[in-house]
Image (cartoon, rainbow, N blue to C red; front, side, top):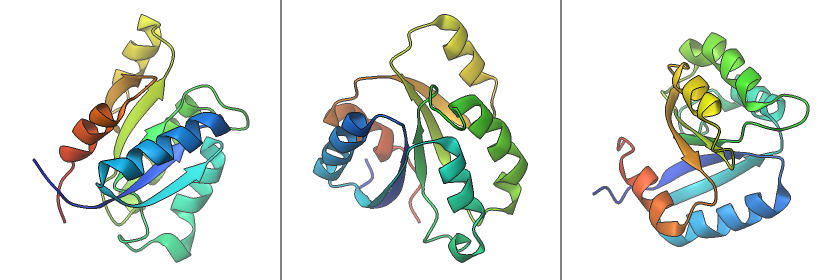
Length: 137
């Protein structure tokens, strides 16, 4: 099991989820930084900003909600597919949703960038498990 520190990105419009997820992720001891965005557009803007193009600025993992205003998770994934080749590192993406709808789960699997679909809520042990499989730098 890895013990590396990872840059984490939470993309979710729910402030309560963001707060609790951040606290739980910090409690795993496996994060070095946690960036939060309230919609996919904010995250895409961050990822494509030339100031953030070195690997240590970019997240190692993204926890992506589906239902958000401005740019939802599906549009984020479509946009991400067009920019990922320009990023300084591969980023692991987990779709995180309270939806147990099989069509959402299947749709998430149609995106090559998505590693897995995780159903909320997520406890510390689940976050630890998801982070522990990330590649070490």
